[in-house]
Image (cartoon, rainbow, N blue to C red; front, side):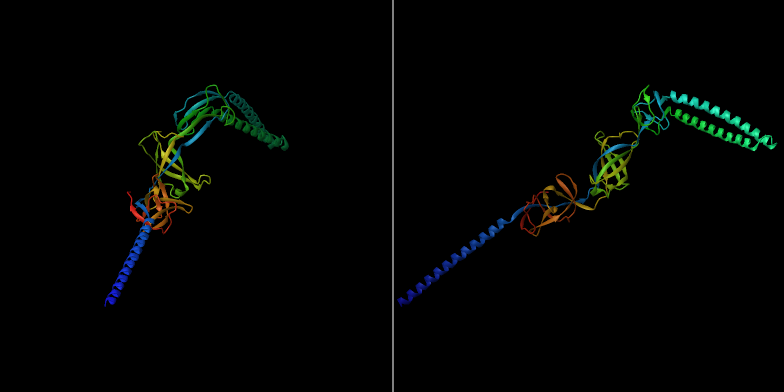
Length: 376
């Protein structure tokens, strides 16, 4: 009986030892599983996310431009001589046909006197040839003279008339040259330059010294030329509204409108030359001035604004890293406007995305992340 009790005690001790060993192994396995889970949890990156802000895409494009007079031309002399006097100086407003200066033309005056004397001589010869031809025609009827002699007198009359017409044309030419002694304003505008003075030698045309006498600009309406980027060129059509701002007119905006474009992209700058016209009745806008052109371009639909630090710049283009169901998605996007700290996105977002702030360069699509909402 004692022997049986000893066997039972030994079996019980073995069972207890086995259970203790099994419990130890089980605890060790649980600890290892917990360590693995903790390690895996620690391996998941924690990211801050923001949501894009919805809105309508901006319809204002601000570009630099240059103001030019609507009509701008130099004024030259059409005859040679010396400047007798001038009547307008820089800054003067003139009307069409207003006298600006007078030129003395002694050579033209002498040539005109000579041409008029020559015309008088040829007229007298023509009148004599006319009476002679008429007399010979009358004598031919009575056969007092030959037909050959009569034809010669008639031919002489025609030659004398041709000489008289040539002399008359020369007189008209010189009278026209003499009329150019008076320099008239070709259009209404402002004198922006006076390049001559009393007694100066004047040469006709644009060659030689003293070529340009005045410079005249029409500024009641001015043109503004601006280079529009290729991306916005299709929206910069004639009729689009615009506003102009200048640093010297703080708070004032000048209303304008696009009137024409070059209809061709400059291959060097990849821009479209656009002309904007603006009324300038008070003359506040000066030709040559720098101006900011605010073009009211049609919007491209719904857009979203995102922080600049949510973007990724890679070889395939600009993209953002979004989180969906705990995993990363890389979304290509298109920028409408760059506001510095934020970007306007016109394609690539729906508006419900969670965008990772400051994504690492090594982030990959499908990577598991833990999300923490960041302040917008």
